[in-house]
Amino acid sequence: MKKDNALLTILLCLLVVLLLLIIFIFLPQQERKKIAPIVKKENKNFVLQEVNFYQIKDGKLPQPKDFLDTKITGTLTYQNAIQIARDYFNEKSYESALFWAYRAYQIESSSKEAWTLYAKSLRKLGYKKEALEILKYYQEHY
Image (cartoon, rainbow, N blue to C red; front, top):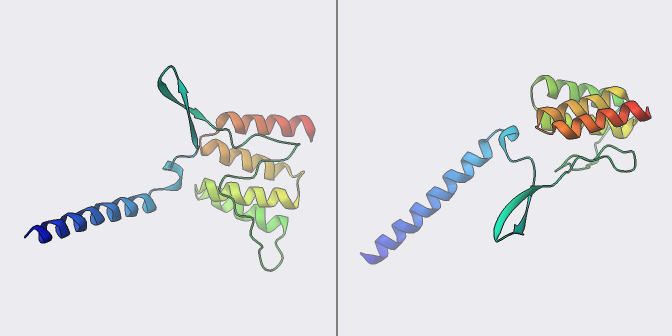
């Protein structure tokens, strides 16, 4: 009897973990946490401090968080990349739009549309300050 209760408890725990995993997988990406918090100790209290992933360094757009720079077979042109970014943006898939705007930027770094689509995607993901800084930088330098 005790073995059956222990087995049932283990199965119940596994079921709960599985349900939480399924819920997390199907959560929209926009609702997932977009910034990695750093915990610092301050007066015996813990305070969350945001890490800024999207700051311009050396005049270059920052690589998006979780961006995998994979090799794409065939020829990827600027026009293809920016069109894919536009399509994702119009579908409200802002993280994918950000990735493709960054790919377009990698091909043609002075493209106004790549910079603005990148900034607009950041804005929709909740990075308003960073998006404004990127647009300001583009206006001053291009």
